[in-house]
Length: 258
Image 1 (tube, rainbow, N blue to C red):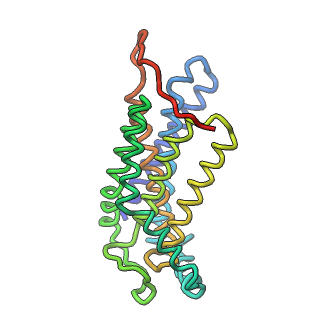
Image 2 (image 1 turned 45 degrees about the vertical axis):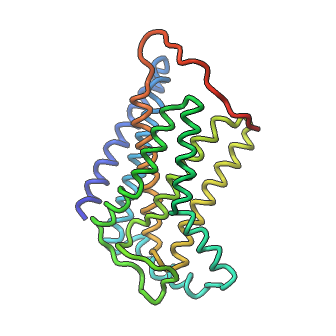
Image 3 (image 1 turned 90 degrees about the vertical axis):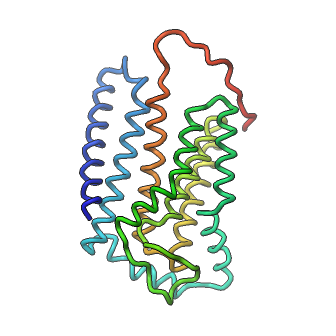
């Protein structure tokens, strides 16, 4: 689990440096505005990466949340309901399906049309890179799936992290990035956030219910997906900083929103 140890060390160091830099900007607010979003994004990505590493190490050492894996899976198997199972299949499919990818790519085009190239690039990179990143970490960890007799879906490959949970975070985050800036009312923004969180949670729960993953697989997928998305947004924000001097990017198109 050397990769998890590296991730924990790197994430912790970067998180600490970002927090220290943010604290320094609070004491000197005059120069805080340009770099604060980048520092916040980097701190979020680093913190989530460190959290992911902690979950992986807990599995390796059979400690913490890893001790809940067997009990949580057994509880879901015992409480399966024929009326609920189709819904869980739908939630699982939404978490990783071609239509979902097509939807996100349509959002990328919309962001570009709205003259938000940075958000469009981040959304495209995060979405298209999602399966590559999650598959790469699966190969490193090579964790066995739950027992075959608990599966309600056909699955292959390693178990950790959950690719569906990873992808759900990325897709929900991309859609939120596209929608939130166009909403003027706090209630509308709150509704979008709640729906995104609920959808992400539903995908993760469905994977445990269907016997495809352990609880810690889903936790690791959520954290790694969040770190990946935050990292993509942070890099684009860093590269997309305006050059010194007057610029006129032209009027930004806006969506009509509540």
